[in-house]
Image (tube, rainbow, N blue to C red; front, side):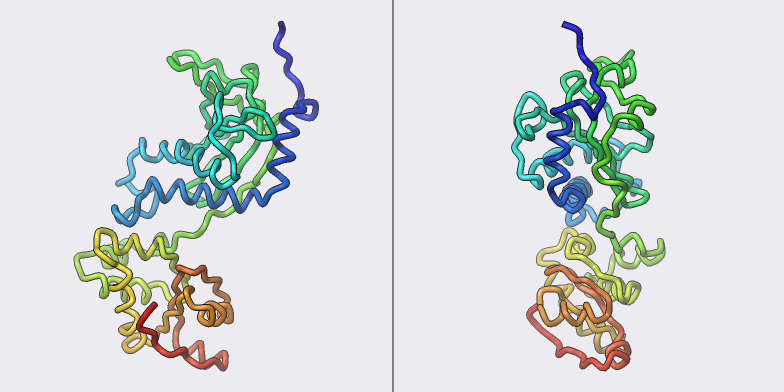
Length: 291
């Protein structure tokens, strides 16, 4: 029986999966999944790494982000790992392919995923953003795969532009504030000094910048109970640098951070210059010892 190639508008399975996906807060869910996959590979709390482009991250590790991404996408979308492909949506087998490679259509589609409905996700580590498409990866729309022992093929650029359905058009990933540090500042924040001193440097270098808990854990990599040492830096910042650290764990401090234009999650910290409180007519919150 001849293999029928339908236009995406006439592909009932493709359209059913597309409708299911866009009925959800897809940008938010895929953003979380991509961020989790990146952080899993970097393993910052153990390695001090916070950037996929760091020379300490080898090419195989960067490539593994796409593999890890499959599992995080399945979890975030509330799906299950279902054969014969990666998952099933409304009864349709779906392949999930993620990549950090930089080209128009950089995904390598395995033989079993060819001609199947495929969720394509691309992460741009340099731009700290991601995008997603849905495409039926017909072999006629893929490269020849010559010399490729496992017969993987990539979408042809023209076919990708013509037949891939956009799901998320280049959205920002959560910011990684450690990338704002200069090379000299990085040498201090990740230097040989104790964590209290390094944390003090971090917040003096980045006032009014929200620092998520994952970034704090990266700075404290390899230490027992790094959050205890980080909390100790708050008094130094307050007394010696006039920086008031607001912690997202406390509702009142989250609300106060909002007055300065900062959105704090439960594990986020931000150091606000004391002078800004007076400018806003706000009282400086009392020091806490149990953050």
